[in-house]
Structure formats: C-alpha cells, structure tokens
Length: 390
Ligand SMILES: [Zn+2]
Image (cartoon, rainbow, N blue to C red; front, side, top):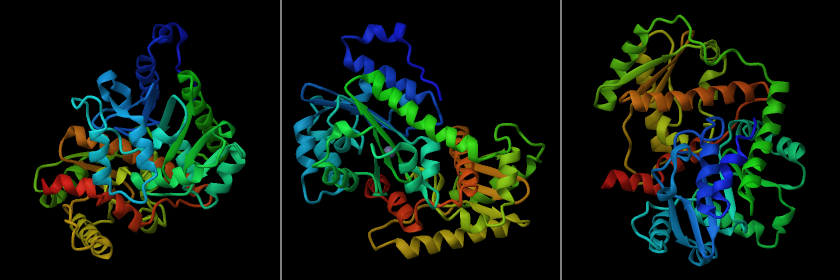
C-alpha cells in the first residue's frame, strides 16, 4: 500500500490543522482496504478541543462540518469513570460539544481523547484484521511489529473499550509505541504530525499485506463468473417475504466467491465472526446457506437466527427482522439481499472483503473472529436498539 500524501496539496493546510485533518482523513477513506462504508474514524486536538469524526460521515467524503468539537477535559474525565452506559456516554459527549449544530461525536471519542497526540487515525484495515482473526494472530502481530506495537484483546467498542485502554496505558510511555492493534477490530496510529500519523498507518498495513502476499494465494475476486442471474432473483423473492419489502438482489460469482461457496467447513466457518465488529449491523452474524432448495435454505437461516437470538437475548431486547442480508449458494457464489441498490452495493462490498479475509485466514491456520455472543452484543447494542424503539 502506498502513501497518497501529496506535499503540493498539503502545503495549503500548514497553518490549518483541521484542514489537514480533513485532507488525510479523505486519503484514508479512499482505500477500501482501510475503511468501508462509515468504518474507521479520525481526530485532531486543537487547544482544548477534540475534533472527532461525527456519526453519519464517511472518511472519503468528510469535510470540516463532519468533525464534532468536543471539550477534551470532559472526555478525559469520562475515561476515569468506573462505569457508564453507552447511551449516557453519547449524551454527555454531545453536551460537551462547543457547538450543538454538529453531529454526534464518534463512539470512539474518549479513546481518541486519551491518546496524547494531536492526530489520531483509526481504520479497520483488512490485512491487519485478517491476521488478528487467525489462531496465532496475537503472536503473529507481535512478531511482525515488535514490542513497540500495543496489542489489545477484543473488547466491545464504546465506553468499555475506551476504559480498558485507559487502564492499560496509564503508566505507559506513549513515545515508545509505534501504534495500537485491536484484535478482531482494527488499528490506531498517532502523531503530532498529520502526515506521520497517516504514513504510520500505511506502513503498518503494508507489513501485513506483504505477509499475506507471501503466504496466501487467492482466486480472482473482481472478475465476474458466468453464473445464472435468475438464481439471484429467486433467492430475492424468498428473502423479501421476511424483510417485508422488495429486495434488490445482486449475484457475486467471481471465482473467489465460487470457491468460498464450496468450502467443506462453510457451515461452521460463517459462524466464526465477521471481519470487524460493526459489520454485523449491516450483514447480520451469518448468511443463509443454500444447497439446492432455496425455500429450505432460507427457512434454515430463520431457525438459526431465532436460536441465536434466544440464546443471547434478555427481556429488554427486540428481535430484528429474520431476513438474511446475503446467501451463499453452493457451487454458484453469493447473492446479496439489500432492500435497494445502495444497500446491496454496501453489503456486496462488505461481503467481498469478508470472504477474502476468511479465505486468507483459512490458509494461515483457520478463521476465527468474534463469537456469536460477541456478535450479538454488537448487533443488539443499546444505541442500535434505541433507534428501533423510537
Ligand atoms: Zn473501530
């Protein structure tokens, strides 16, 4: 992965740190291998304010109004609390904004605040996360990056994660760190110089990409197959009954998707977690698997999704719809099941990156990310559920 930083463009932001923040955030956003559809977040500290990515903005198109100004002292104080619900955290972060016209700050704002550098960059880089989703992922990461890389075991994003990292780093010399890898989640880099923070990210990802290139061989993931598109329509009609609206099915039948569909351990593999936690909100914890009869494949998904809900839910949870967001069709590939073209393209991107990661990890000892219980925690996160209750 090469740096896209262009000195001739960046020079205009020499005395405009927020402008510089916008510039390198957009550079990160341009690579789908780093962030996908709203994933990742960035910030800059100016005087006593943290300007952090607000919800609803994507890094590739973010502008200054996408960076919410939050009082740094308030965020630092929040990190010291014993406990705090994410709902309360969001409300207090909002109250600490100097201008209420901005969007809600990222749920990772406290984490950005406790990192003592001006520029903080956070991505869900495919290559690094893929390595963390293998059986020896932690040792592999430590070997590749050395002692200077801080490795954080998985903790659900939000207050718990910020608190966990706050406790871990209280007595740490941040100057000794080259970055931070969050197992099954992503990467943080930081520096007082925007270009350095960005290029540290590029370098970390390049190391992981090089390792993957040396150890993994993949079939083409972009070229389309010659599959029969009518199967996508047929699956779409069946799944639409569960979603309560028409769907916009898309067929992904690249050689890579076909290969994925015939993996002998497919049924267990798809229940071993996604690429990065937030994807579950878009694609659910696992797909439908169709082996011949479409109706029974979809019905099997419904039963499995219900058992997943029953096994993890308490009385406060509201069950989401029972429609799969994608279906693996054995021997054919994958059908994406968004409610319109926009949603199908987003799901399609996430699925393509996910199967690439899974097929890669399978060549590195096996795929393993979040458990179903951890996926549930994320899919039924209180802030997501609150949206339903409105
Ligand atoms: Zn993240």
